[in-house]
Image (cartoon, rainbow, N blue to C red; front, side, top):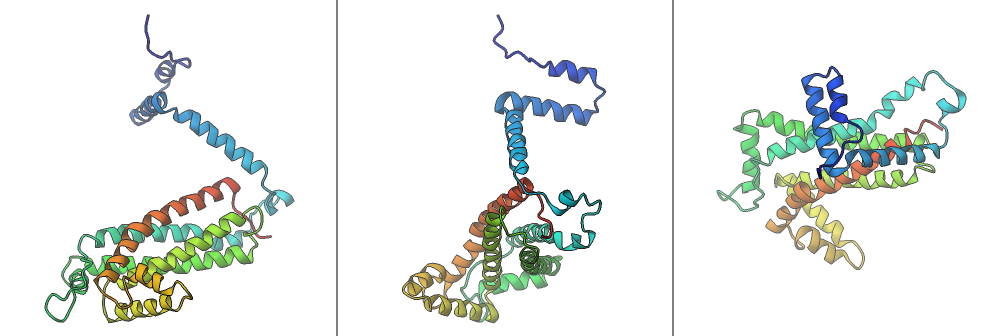
Length: 267
């Protein structure tokens, strides 16, 4: 008596009866192998069932309500801002990871004038092959992301896309634009130049101005009431470790909700 699980659907026979390419055969074989062990198809069916149940409860869009053949073609550039900001984030993440191979988050002076962090940025800009291009791509993608997220929020507000039942995603969007600004601020401090130093000092003063908890916030975020190695280390950890994982997870949730609810057209 064989203890091997019976294939009720005869997947192997079905594959043999089809004229499949090598790539298709490898894909289906891998999927079947994983499905026998992790029940992937069952979970996909659950997600599909959940998707249709949620979408059946969504209010009809203008296109569905009035049977329009053309979905307001003049809105399309504005509706691409969410994807544009996501692409900018991916470009910034990849270029930032490459820059991390050459950047040193150290505020100590190496020759009595410039800090190690500043010199590592100078090395990237002046000596590294295509380093100037890499840093420029990172900087411009970050700036494009800030602009795209801001314009995306404006589009959502002025087209009424924040209203029920999409108010949760609106709140998530507010969190994302806040994280985007924190991303920009922490990255601005990493070169540890004069501009970075005084931007950091402004941040310390702003933290100290918070009633009751100002000193605690300054100690936590900047490592004290004046800028030091602790400040640079905190900014680096936030920019490279905490923010990317948190932002990526929230973006995934944000896009997942849009996928379930559908795109909100102008109301």
